[in-house]
Image 1 (tube, one colour):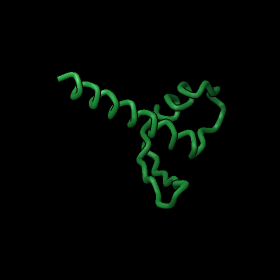
Image 2 (spheres, one colour):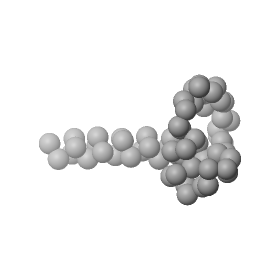
Image 3 (cartoon, one colour):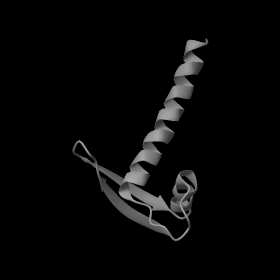
Image 4 (cartoon, helix red, strand yellow):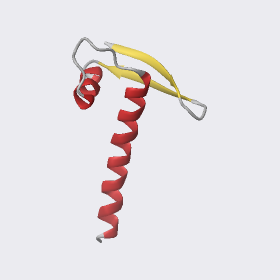
Length: 66
């Protein structure tokens, strides 16, 4: 199952996503939510922001140590 979702960003613009099965469960797990709780647009936005920031930080730290 793939769900199409558009999230309005706080400073304008939109984040357009194709959400695959299991993604909501990962977001719930990350934020300590129960399986019956809704995943909000803000939950998704912050989850993606955090994951992207962590990945970039890891790459940058590897380049600094070279």
